[in-house]
Image (cartoon, rainbow, N blue to C red):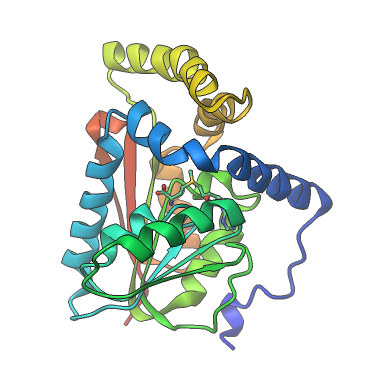
Length: 249
Ligand SMILES: C[S@@+](CC[C@H](N)C(=O)[O-])C[C@H]1O[C@@H](n2cnc3c(N)ncnc32)[C@H](O)[C@@H]1O
């Protein structure tokens, strides 16, 4: 066991457990509508962001057939996007999201196998250093402890392994920023409620993005978790951000 990244001794607090349960229940409630809403509310930009994520990992990884771990894989869209690059394991703690992901992966024609299993991002059910790349989309913001999540991701990677994290950001540009915030905080929660039939989750989305650290601060947290070569790319004028790092070879 790698002692400087061993996190097994850290037990989650009661409030972290409550938060994790609330997040898991929330994704369980919206699972059936998740894919549709994801693509609809982002005007399909989410597909483009996942493709950029695959391209950037392919650029950095430098080996054929990398073993990829998708943390918080949900309904497996990112896992499927990576299935042309190497074998993928997707992990999520929401059973309903995983069930939908399993149906999708069973019907997909992938170059490499995709396996999905249930597990918690804060205590991943895999031995150390078993993957060449760890990827994660729209998950970090939901974790009860971001640093613990990053530290687990680092534990998964072999020396030289690559990390790629995709999540929402907030555009800086004045006019676009204002328009986007209006859409994100006023329109999106109403549309989300209308289509999913539940109130909370699409109100939670803008709330969780507005309290999420900005990319510069996230890059610092990634460095503190033991990554080097950290960088981030703003996507679609800052609506999304792709954070990258790697482990020393
Ligand atoms: C917004 S969805 C993103 C799903 C997928 N990555 C995508 O790109 O569509 C967030 C996912 O993270 C999962 N998640 C959140 N916290 C988690 C945790 N502590 N452990 C495992 N999965 C978690 C949720 O269950 C949900 O499926």
